[in-house]
Image 1 (cartoon, rainbow, N blue to C red):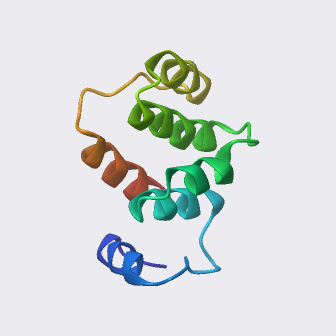
Image 2 (image 1 turned 45 degrees about the vertical axis):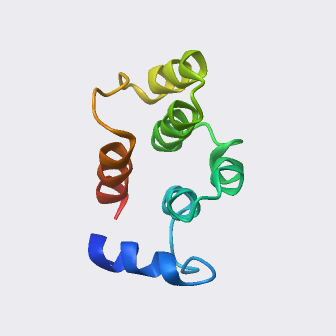
Image 3 (image 1 turned 90 degrees about the vertical axis):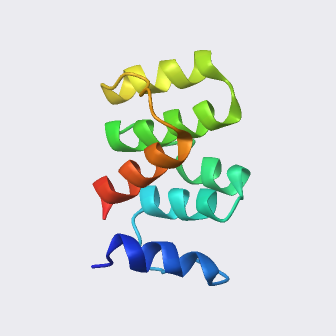
Amino acid sequence: MQTFTEFKASLSLPKPDSGLSVKLKSLWYDGKGDWAKAHAEVDQLNDKASAWVHAYLHRKEGDIWNADYWYSRAGKTRPDVSLQEEWEQLVEAFL
C-alpha cells in the first residue's frame, strides 16, 4: 500500500501503478494534469466513491451544477476547500 508521499512522487512516472484502484487512477491522471483521462476513468461508474471523484472533477472543470449533482450521488456536499486540498483528501481517503 502506498503512502500519500509515494503516490505524489509517482506523478513523475509515465503511467500509474497497475495496482491502483480506478478512483486513484483517476486522481493520478488529474494530478498529472490530464482531466479528460481522469474523467474517463470514473465517468461510467455509479458507486458513491467514484461519484465523489467525479464530483471533484466537475468542480475543477467549473461545472458547478454538474459537480453538485455528483456530490449528491456520493452522499457529500461540495466542500469549502481549495481544489488542491480536496484532491489531497480524496487521495488520502482511497489510499
